[in-house]
Image 1 (tube, rainbow, N blue to C red):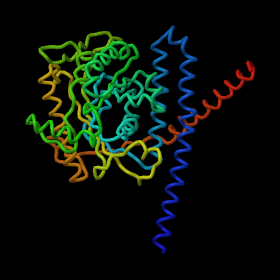
Image 2: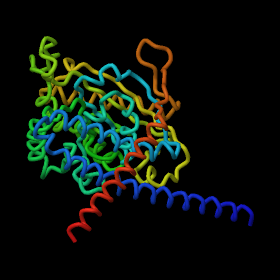
Image 3: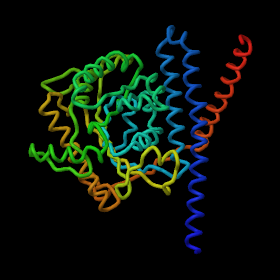
Image 4: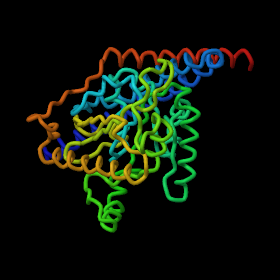
Length: 370
């Protein structure tokens, strides 16, 4: 009887905590997202006079919005351990980021681990499934200039044309630096069987922890944003160009996300916090853009090789609990990514204060006219 009572007590506490977290996040969204939109409406004259300053301010607020999402996981004990190359030195240069995709929590993990990487978050463009457009955060991403892509053969060619047009219109005009995509084109659990079947038919590597990546969006990004092509590869850019002119993509940042016991987190976990404190592991590897081909066949081989390496990284992690050391080193070094609690409190306070101010302003005008 005692174990049953203890189990019921724990379940009750989990449910109560989940309800409290959900209520807080619902209110958090209700004050932060409308405030973000209203501030940008108020700043439209600045957009006409000085669009660079406007998008700078928008980027700062966008980073704060992502920091609020990060705080939901951080207060639940969901933290990040970082491995591999240090990406901070290239945070001000243009880069394409390729990430393995296991669950919706991957996006939340990236929102957290990139918070301390200089201006990356506020100058970042995301490629995500079009369904995300219809979520609570979809309006923010739409205003920020992220691209929503429809999956499936029926939409593929049109979507790639839309992507190129979107990059031409918004990437440089809004001073974006990093662009993030998930080349697998879907969650691991949904694509694994199809990917393995395709690999078997075409004598490609059999992958378990990742799936074979799709080429389309990666190639469009490289051809549209990369520096001048030289012999089928991307040039390194002209270092003598004016500072205010883009040199094009300079790096590919390969990010591999690993969850303990291969149990990925989803957005529901971040919202309700019902999983015990968990450390997610993130591995970075940097490639100079000049080493990346752009023509279809060599780029396909290059991209497949990156995901074969991800497979090896994840297999080693799930066996040992750590990523393998880089070549030439005996031991892998990891570092815990931390968020400043004071800064998170200030961001949340600003959101709630803004919500109150805008409510008061709108209520005043409502009373004046009605």
